[in-house]
Each structure stands twice: as structure tokens, then as C-alpha cells.
Image (tube, rainbow, N blue to C red; front, side, top):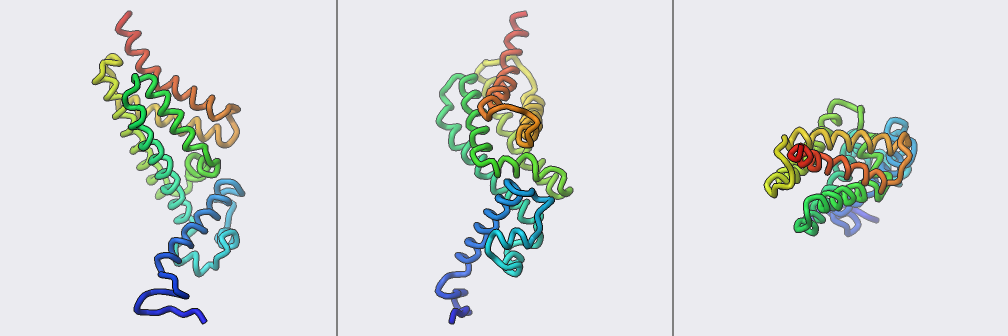
Length: 218
């Protein structure tokens, strides 16, 4: 019979940390299926998640206090995946001209955010308007993307690739546009491919650079 060994925290020969990690993976996957591809967070119940994960409610409560905690965890988890993919690719394009670099980075971001449509729905739809806590979490993660865009624009200014402008204002406007467009695209209000979405965002992002030079010539 399997038993817990108090000295080692092992159960049936497996350490507690391993069992904890496995439960998290199963619950995350169940949450992605139900929130990101199924009825959505608002129409899912805790028992539905447990059934999909093949776990008991007791095991769920060993990992999360509420269903909202699972959604919050998924939002951070997916954001981290997309952000890491984006950061990994930045170094590979840093020697390109700024406009070509911008184009590649936008397509990298959209590709990472849409590679798994469950992730897309978590990022841009399911997290919106759930609670003040999750709204704050969403804004905090958005601020990180704004900082990345500020760095990109500041580099363009240092290279003389654009006339002077406020990089933070422009970055905030762009990131807000990304969230709005991706929400509408995810729920089907915008009929386009992911490449078309990336192309449109690329034009928006480079537009400020082009506009600056146009002002200089006028």
C-alpha cells in the first residue's frame, strides 16, 4: 500500500514536489481546454476542471484556492511563454535596420501569442473584466510590454531613425491597440489571418517612425 514517509515527504516513492508539479500541469491543461477552447472561464465550474484534469476537488484545493486563482495562474503562465519567446528572438534581429527589426518582432509576437489559440483567448478575452484583482494583474503585465516598446523606440531615436517624439506615449498607444485588436480578432469580430493582423500592427508600429521623417521633410 502506498504511504507517506514523513521524513522524506515521499508518496509511493515520488517526492511531494514532483506530485505538486504534475497536478499543476494537469490543472493548467484542463483550464486551457475549458477556458481557452471550451465554454470559457465564466461558464466553467470547478468540478468541470477537476473532471477534465482527472483529479479530485481536494487535489485542486491543494494547488489553488479558487477557480479564479487558476485563471490568474494561466494568464501569467501564458504571458511568460510569449514574453520569453519574444525576448529570445530580440537578440537575433538586433543588427537589422530598425524598420526591418520592428517587422520581425511584431510577427514574432503575434506568432507566439497565436500559436495555441487557447493561449490567445486567455490573454485577450477570458482575463478581461473578471475582477479588480485580475484587471490589476492584466495592467501590470501590459506595463511590461510597454517598457519593451519604449526600449525599441528609444533605440530608434538613438540611431536617428526618427524625429523626436515621446516613446512612452507612443508605446502605450500601440500596446493598447494590440490588446483591442487581438480581443476583437479572437472573438471573431475581425476577419483576418494572424499574418494579416501582424502586418497591420507592423504598419502601426513603424508609422510613427515614418511620420517623424515626413515631418522633417515638410
